Amino acid sequence: MEYIVLIISAVLIKNILLAEYLGNCPFLGTSKRMDTAVGMGLSVIFVMTIATAVTYWVQYKVLNPLGLGYLQTIAFILVIAALVQFVEMFLRKFAPPLYQALGIFLPLITTNCAVLGTAILCIRREQTFPEAIVFAIASASGFTLALILLAGIRERLEISDVPKALRGTAIGLIMAGLMSLAFFGFVGVDGSLKALLHN
Amino acid sequence: MGLSKEFTKGLWNELPPFRLVLGLCPVLAVTKSAETGLGMGLAVIFVLTCSNMLVSSLRNVIPRKVRIASFIVIIATFVVVVELTAQAFFYPIYEKLGIFIPLIVVNCIILGRAEAFASRNGVIPSALDGLGIGTGFTLSLTVLGGIREILGNGTIFGAEIMWSSFRPFTFMVEAPGAFLSLGLLLGIMNAFSKSN
Image (cartoon, rainbow over all chains, first blue to last red):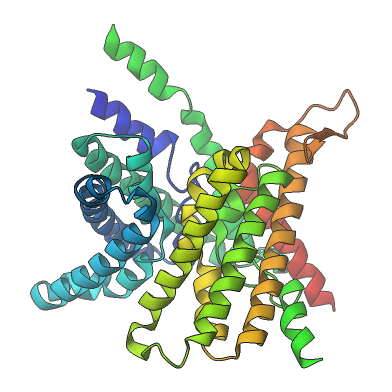
């Protein structure tokens, strides 16, 4: 039951894009069209889950026993970069249709701070392994949800009369701000859910 | 003249994050107040200048195929230096910046400058480029942080400046305010540069 609260909190209340400010470059970069938004969202779910599992293992089985905790940043970014490369090669070889759909987004994910951020957050919050995995999937789903919502809005903006100076990224940011205001409405839901579950 | 241009272009023509719309996450996250914006900016100046210098001095040694991975290792090294220094000597600001210090590694501005400038130019122009872009980034963060802190909290660098009956717009220091103020500032910058 704790997991339900964790999922709702990661998807809606502390949405990784709209409340935690992670992964905003791809958020604005790939939200102009719906198909790129869906592709990016699915790639992030895929990579973030694997990356969190692997970095969790690296932290607790390699870095901590050797007393190398201060190398966390370097180790994690290298693991993620290598992993993305590996996933890309694996998909190209064994799942060409999936590679066709996600291929161009995979290299971009290495520098997506949402992936590294989630991996580090799991360690900093001292989550257990199942919690970390659930948290990663939920965060990535929240990312996809916000990305697809924004892509829907921006596709409509294409045909509307936006002031010249605000066209492009500026109006995208303002839309993201309004969406984040809407997501603010969920604040406190996790608290009441927790209270409900304990009664 | 040529060298000073490398520095000054970062202050207006290529001012991040407004002209180069890169590295947005720290911009949104750490501009809750002018102080955190300035702290983040200084960390980025250090990492950017050092990594630009090292990348440019190694540019003939690094094989092209593994250059991105090498750049990331170089950047990550300096980020760890900043992280440990901040933890030891500037603990309050380290606490406030939190996860965004390790995340300087994936700040696209730094990797972007390594790839677009430092890997093609000498050490001194690269250092000036890093300093210039870093200073522009710091100024933007401090201004944005200042605006959000004044409107959202009624203070600047922690000092009260608004009249006593002023009711702060609390949402300005939360996530929606970050997106809105950055979007509006970007629009103002666009309007201004088009009229020139």
